Length: 180
Image 1 (cartoon, rainbow, N blue to C red):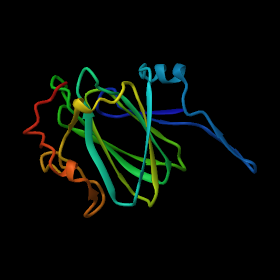
Image 2 (image 1 turned 90 degrees about the vertical axis):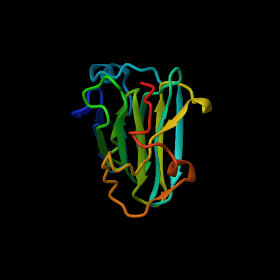
Image 3 (image 1 turned 135 degrees about the vertical axis):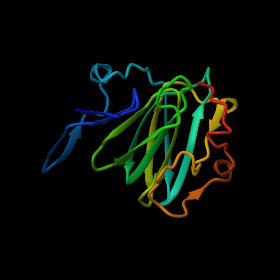
C-alpha cells in the first residue's frame, strides 16, 4: 500500500498493491492497521455510493458538528477529480484546496478529514463513486460551499459541468461561517 501525503495536514491518498494475473486481480482496500500507520484512525459507520454521468459535479459538501464526517472516497467505475477545501478556522491552510484524480483502474482512495468541504466531478460516463463515512448522515447538518467560488480558484478541468440547483446557491468562502 502506497501512502501519499498532501501539503494540508491529515489529507492522504492511498494506493493499494494490486496482484494481477491471467485470472484477474486481487487487492486489499482497507486495513485498520495500515490506515492507522498513515494517521487514519476513524471508525467508518456508513457507506454511500453515487452514479454520475460524465460532467456531473457534486459538491462542495460537508456535515456540521456533531454529525461531521471524515470520508474515505474512491471510484469503483470510471474516473473523477476529487477536490477538498480546508474549513478548519484555526488551520494554517484554511481556505486552501487540494485535488486527487481517482481512477477505478488505479484503485486509489482519498482520505478527507473532518473539517473539509468535499466535491468531485465525474470524468467518464457512469462513474461510480464510493464513500466510507465516519458518522451518520443528518439532513439538518448539511453544509456546503459554492463550487465555483473565484476566491477558491479551483480548476475542475471541465467546462460547463452539470450541477444541481442546490449546489448552485451555496455560500462562498467569504460568506460561510465555518462550523469547524
